[in-house]
Length: 101
Image (cartoon, helix red, strand yellow):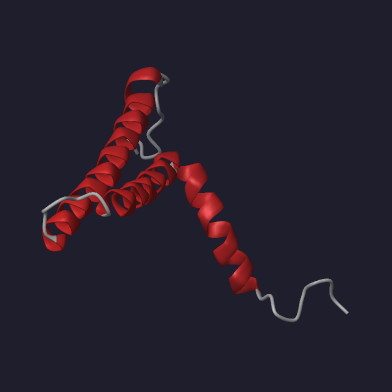
């Protein structure tokens, strides 16, 4: 008998590790997801006190705020990774293809 469960396959294990692998590759993705969830929670709280604003206009503004949060976090992550790679990492990189034969 193996130590694995009957209900857990290799594909399930790969899917469960996918989020942790993505978090290590791009940590700002998790910040973007957290910002999206925060915008949704804040929007749900403010929905009760929206005043005379119609529901459709409120939801459009909430969607723009949530998407803006995610785009801003991903842009900050891209700027961070580019800065780290091109400005702070001054080590010369070797070209695997040589121009001479």
